[in-house]
Image (tube, rainbow, N blue to C red):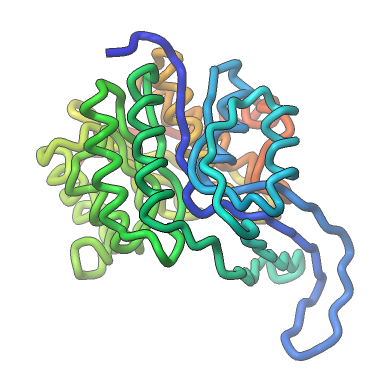
Length: 316
């Protein structure tokens, strides 16, 4: 098993995010953009950029459209990230996010993604296996292209574990089901995704923690469930913690979940205990909500918020 702190992230459906601030956005009307920002994004990419802020070595892979790859390639070069993406014919999708500062709401308009075939999927699986053999942890994040079976997530988790690395998944729907069945080291659904997993509403904290414990016993060492503005719950083999985020002025929720996963992964790579990882992850998520765009320019803002994060042991 690799003893280094090298992290690999897998993004099978990346996007070029165009975030627009539109006060009083109204569908069916002419709307004026007050400001905008363009980012080469996707869960695994956002997480990779954050991990580099901690000085951790990061390699990114997944599927990338060959026709508009340059914006991603520039980002990887600027951030010092190793590019191991499988190139697929066509363009990486565009995602438009309309932020209304008055209603504090976000409207997503997502374009269709790439169409990788079986050859591309096989190439990605082989790359992940090679990378995992030299990695501490591999993070699979985000949605899948329509042509890729959800079963691929579970297969990748098994490949990663077979190579001795820790597998992390942050996805949804059938892909999340597939990944959980393969028992990754860490999984982070939100409360709605957890409800979908178990087939009933999960509104009470004791129900949520009980289900997290069940996942824990099934071989998933770490489970985190985000509850939006209320905070998040974290369970490992020994502790059950609830984290309350600091009070901030929300700007956009884009990238908040990615920042939480990034904090948990960075904390593990740096050898922090669960409570310290939770505090770090919650402050990074809060700092991301307080800005436009999925990636923090620096982690200084999060460091300033860490003392305001309240981490409590859950007693049921």
